[in-house]
Amino acid sequence: MSAANPTGPLRHFLQLRDFSEEEILYVIDRARLIKDKFKRYLPHHTLHDRNLAMVFEKASTRTRVSFEAGMYQLGGSVIYLTTEGSQLGRAEPIEDTARVVSRMVDLVMIRTFEQTRIERFAAHSRVPVINGLTNEYHPCQILADILTFVEHRGPIRGRTVAWIGDANNMSYTWLQAAELLGFTLHVSAPAGYRLDPLRVGDQPASILREFDDPLEACKGADLVTTDVWTSMGYESENEARRLAFADWCVDARMMAAANPDALFMHCLPAHRGEEVTGEVIDGPQSVVWDEAENRLHAQKALMEFLLLGRL
Ligand code: CP
Ligand code: NVA
Image 1 (tube, rainbow, N blue to C red):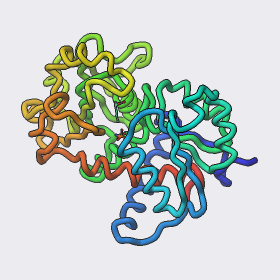
Image 2: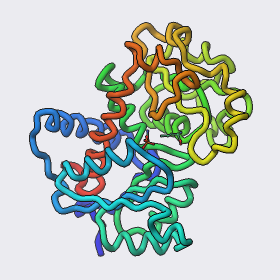
Image 3: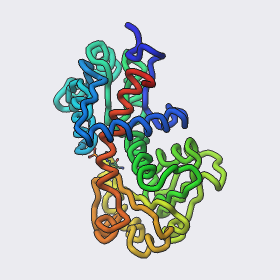
């Protein structure tokens, strides 16, 4: 069977750097067009009769709703699978699952634990595979975040993003975005929760600067962003993290240290009073609801691109 995209080779979206800068900017642009049509109730059925399988090995609200609604809006349909509700929960190998599912659908989205698990699936898939979050990366969220930044402030190239918090799937994907799209990422996390130098490699200060003090990291930022102190799969570390991250709560003082027109983003779900105060997330600089909505538009553009190429 040939690749699902008739105009090119089989492509996956397992991490942000699977795409070039030009491809990411194309998807963002296309998302803006699709969003505009959606707002005007104009039909956009480019994936008519196409079928997306979604495999969830972790919980989700936004990812499920945005992929499911998005695929229907494009004229296609979806199949929702979980670990417990499928043979994955009874130890069917991920490779066999990939071989079978990808003979029956046009596209697969997976949310799982290790990145190697989605890579193993993709290696045995006949159709494009999308990372809907792994322990290591969350590239769909960053597509939506870039779209949100561009809508509110224009191009992100040359800007500064402050990441206040854990070295997790979001921060490592922000780092890939900084490298690909040419902006500076400031990172501040407590000792023991900082970026792994082996994963980061050598980065110039124009791409990555790390700070002990979160307030310092916010200085000069055009966007301040954070995430829960404990990501899914790490719940046994909850108590230790609560103590370690106590001073890494994005508050009005940190937002005041950033540039006057700085935005605040959070991939959600959020814990008010932990990683961010209610005053900030519900305040005038916060664009978290646009950010959540943009998951829908960005992923519709992503699915189209993987299946149809450039239109
Ligand atoms: N931000 C995000 O991926 O949300 P869900 O976990 O609800 O899908
Ligand atoms: N870092 C969080 C993101 C949730 C959308 C997690 O992995 O749980």
